[in-house]
Figure 1 (cartoon, rainbow, N blue to C red):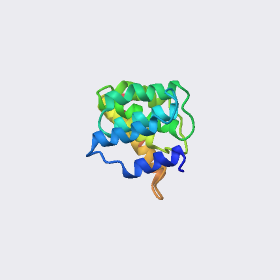
Figure 2 (figure 1 turned 90 degrees about the vertical axis):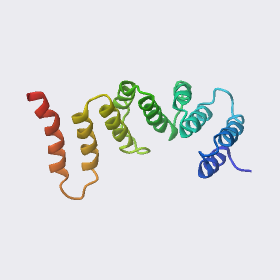
Figure 3 (figure 1 turned 45 degrees about the vertical axis):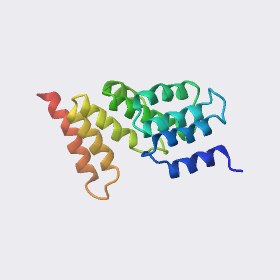
Figure 4 (figure 1 turned 135 degrees about the vertical axis):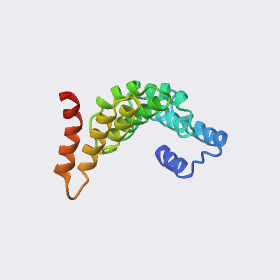
Length: 162
């Protein structure tokens, strides 16, 4: 018999957003295998709502998973997914606050920076959004890394001098 995590992995490898009722039912069965306040189950339940475009329903579920002590690989994903959902429902400032407090991690890499840039743009901070995106991009460049970082820093330095 497969472990719960293996069942979750199989679920996500076959999830179909064109069949929302079936997708929710399949995840509901998996979540029901765990205690009601299990943070991993809450996270997966939030994720399926998010996946199906039900961000408003996902937000309290992500928060509950985090409040119940979600750890491991799922925790940084939950923070990013919560922030993305907040941004998608029109609350970019809440997303910014979450992502600014989110430390760099090996699980999600620079994903938090990408979502922070999107939230900043939505909140009207286009130069800062571009700066964050460029700094994250610069880390991946084989050439011109320092130049791109310097240009990124100039974006907000010039703004503050004016």
